[in-house]
Length: 178
Image 1: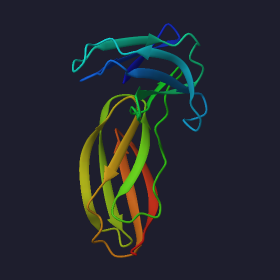
Image 2 (image 1 turned 90 degrees about the vertical axis):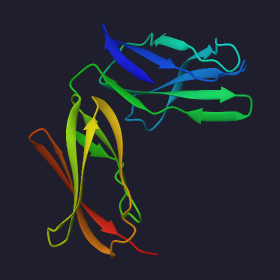
Image 3 (image 1 turned 30 degrees about the horizontal axis):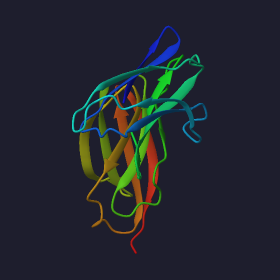
Image 4 (image 1 turned 180 degrees about the horizontal axis):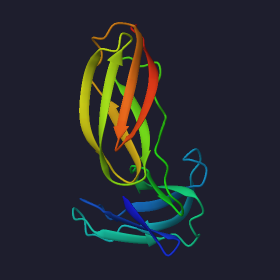
């Protein structure tokens, strides 16, 4: 799922693969930071069985602040959701949300980015020693990141550092071992 703000309205686009004749796409919108979604439209699959198609949907309600979108795919008894995207009528601030804390084997979080840019994710122990550093690319809007393979770390305090351009976000984390 991709989207752009076009004249104050959201224009959503997605491409399907291997459709069946019974697939339905429900377009959902959230105006409360992704806490609650409501359906704003439904499109039936248009590709022949086993093929894909391209879809466009224009939200009839104007963008007002930050708006989150996702697709709910229904195919007989099967249901799944697309990734969630963020479109905005205003500048998107840099921020982290949904940080999994305490963590066990991985650190998982969402990040909003004002524009596409490379980022650096670093994890430090309580003594300031660098444990891992990864380079990633953040897209404008909502992103999801995971730092994996952390199961061997000892229980204790850690620091997550996210570097985006010249801005740095630092979060304290607790590692638990069960």
